[in-house]
Image (cartoon, rainbow, N blue to C red; front, side, top):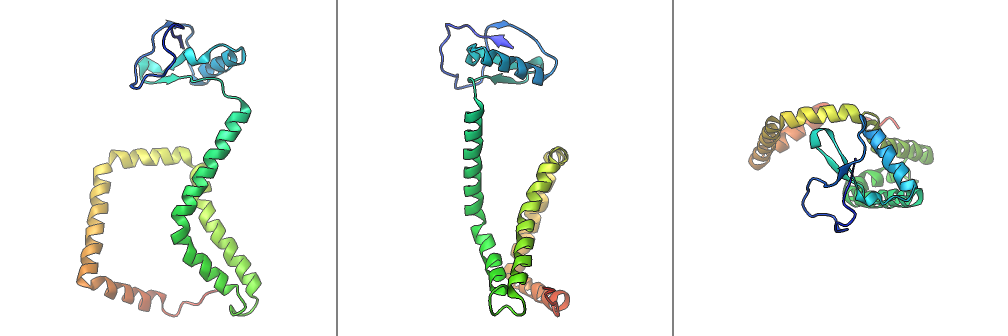
Length: 196
C-alpha cells in the first residue's frame, strides 16, 4: 500500500501510471490489504490517496473512496436491474414463441387438465432458463479454467467455428440444408408424442 502525496491533483489519471508516494505497509495477501484500507476508511482517512500494488507491480488498484453498505446495496440493485433489462430485451425474441406455445397448451383448447399442464410446462421452462446461470455461478472457478483453455486454443476455436458457419451457409445456399432438416424431422422426430 502506498500513500500518495496529498498535494497532488485530485483527479484520476487518464492513462494508467505507477503511483507515487511512500510505502506505508506490505501484506502477503490481497484480503489483508483490503482489510487495512477498510480500517483506514472507517477512521475517516482519505483513502482516495491510497493505492494497492500487486506482486512485482503487475497490478495497481486505486481506492476511489469510502463506500457505505447502503451505497453498495443500491449500486448492486441498480446494476442487477440494468442486467435484467438487457437480458430481457435480448431474450424476448427467443422466449416469446416458446412461452406462447406453453400458454397455448395451457389454454382451454390444450386438452385434458390444461392448468396442470401449463404449470408443469411453465416450471420446466423457468428451470431451463435459470439453472444454467446457477450452474455457471456454482462452477465459476472451473469455468475460468475452461475459458483459459479456450484462450490458449483461440485460433483453432475460431477456425472451427468459421468452418462450420461456412459449411452451413454453403448447405443453405445449395438447398441441401432443407433436405438434411427434413430427413432429421422424418427419421428422428416423426412420431414423437409430447408426454404432458
